[in-house]
Image 1 (cartoon, one colour):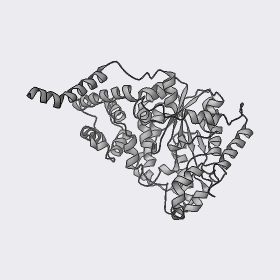
Image 2 (cartoon, rainbow, N blue to C red):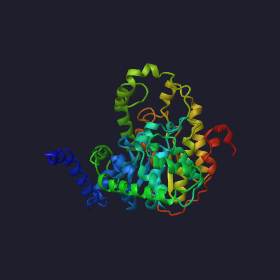
Image 3 (spheres, rainbow, N blue to C red):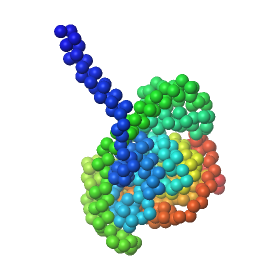
Image 4 (tube, one colour):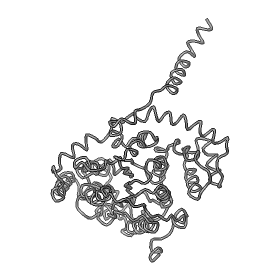
Length: 424
């Protein structure tokens, strides 16, 4: 009787444990070599793909896919979106979209690190948005949502000596509650922050957890790939002329923009205005007079990204989008905030040898350039494409000449006023 009760109580747990063991120890894994899987992942903007390695790294290794790093602007599909233009005109590259709301520099650094081997010596596009650069830096909710323990363990396991970049990264990670939920991670990061590499015992513990996370990546990174932008991209491509004609595509962009911005006077897409702004639009008037994008830790987080690109000789085009000028005027966001951000970012890039910059920051007053308040729209994507297409289609192979300056990791740089860098 007692055995029967024990079996009833613990039998399901035992069976579940056996099933999990069989699953993890068995031969099953996602077929990351399957072109269909990779094609789905390229527009899925899926956290399981970003947090893991298997699918995205395989995609970049093929040489067909080019990573487009950014955030939520990447899922704003119109006829002029990079994925649409590349598909319609059968270009030499296919964008692999790596971004979602809140994937700012700190998250992108971990992703870039995780694909360093596959990305080395290749090209990439990186969209750096003004709204990332708020005084307090990346919000905890955004960081926590996209955090990859696997990427952090990969980095910690590889450490042979601790650099200024490693120390800064460890310090920043410790700012977030999600990281400190794991006592081992917190302990090791505190060591790295003080300039020490993990001990042999710590590395063994890290490697054990890494192996579990990598197995999860093999098993589960393909889940949810059916939710992607493929149908939207295919539908948008049908609106374009059969052969590339800039004037005709501009007309398509204008027609789309005009048709989709009819319920407000701010040049904002109808659906965005209706769902996000209409009920509180009166409260938004003058609400951003004290906002600022010129100071804060995001500037040093962005330096992590630049350091990793330089370390792997990645040739990068940086796209700097504007903000909707009508929205700026309505909310009172000072013009000097946007121009100061732009000046500071361009200096950080150019002074270290990152010379490929599509600076669109002054274009926010052009009709249909922005889809909403802060995201590129119909004309905006087309303007970006005038930089993207020749950059990615160019076959000239020259090793980028970067000269990394660790001053950009400092709090002095984070708080430096744009006016003080003139003439540097």
